Image (tube, rainbow, N blue to C red; front, top):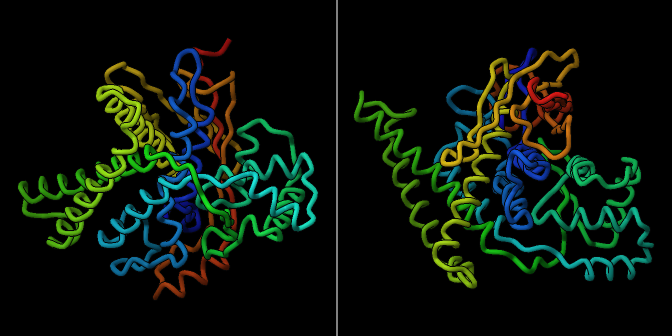
Length: 373
C-alpha cells in the first residue's frame, strides 16, 4: 500500500486503486499535440491491472517490523515483493467474461436488463480481476456515460451478485471488493508481457542500486542480505520464461521489428502512467515535475501545482495539455486516514484501518497558462 503523510498521521491508499487511477488518466490521454494511447483495447487493461497482485497482500496489511509503521510498498521484503509482482503479471494475462453468459444468468434470476443495468454490466465485465463501487462510478464518468445515481449502481451490483455474475469480499483497507464470478476467455498475451517487462525493469534497477551502493561504500538498503539477490534473480529467471512462453502466441501476425516495437511501446506506457499516478498519490506536491513520454521524440508533459482552497484537492496545470478535450480533467481515489503512530502488530493496524476515517483524494488538471485562449 501507499503510505502518504498528512496533517494528522497517514493516508493509506491501496496499490490497486493507484493502478486504476493510472488507467483513468491513460483513458483520457491524447490529442493533436500529445499522441493518444496506442492499442488501447490491450494497453488500458494492462495499465489498470499491473498492480493487481497487491490485492491479496492487502487482505492483511502489515506493520513494518523495523519502524512499527504501516508497511509501505517501498518497504515490503523482497520475498513478498517478487510473489506480488509475479501474481500481478499473471493477473494481467487474464481475459474477459462473456456478456452473453452474464445475460443468461440475469435472465434465469428473473432480473430485467434495463438500459442502466446493461451499462453497469458492461463496465463491470471490463474489469478482469477486481473492482470497487468507486471504480464503477469513476469509470462511468471517464467513459462519458449517462449519469446513473450512486444508489442505483449499488442496487444493480446487488442484482449482479444475486444472479452470481459477481461476488463481493471485504478487505480491511479497500472495503467491499467485487470480482467477476465467470470464466474469463480471450486473453491477450501482450498485457502479461508488458507487465512482466515492467517488473523485470524494477528488479534489475534494484539489483543495480545495491551493486552501486556496495561498490561505493559497502552499504546496501537495510542489511546486506544475500537473499535479496537470490530472490530477485530467481524472479528474473521466472519472468524470462513467462515472456518466452507468451511470445509464441504474441508473435503470430507480427514481423520481428513491429513486434519488438509494440513490446517496447507498451512497456513504456505502463511505466509512464504507473509513475504519473504514483507521483500524484505519494505526496501533496509543491514543486513542478516533468514527465517524459518519449525521450527520442522529445515528448514531455510538465505538471505545476496551483493554489487550492479545498481539502484533499490538488490542482495542477499541465503544459502542454495532454488530455482529450479542453479540460479540466478531474480524477479521485479513496484513502483511509489513520493516526501517525507505531503499531504493535498487524492486528492492531487492521483495527486502526477499520476505525479510520474514509476519505477521498482528488486532483484537478487544467491547461497551462500559455495554452489558455
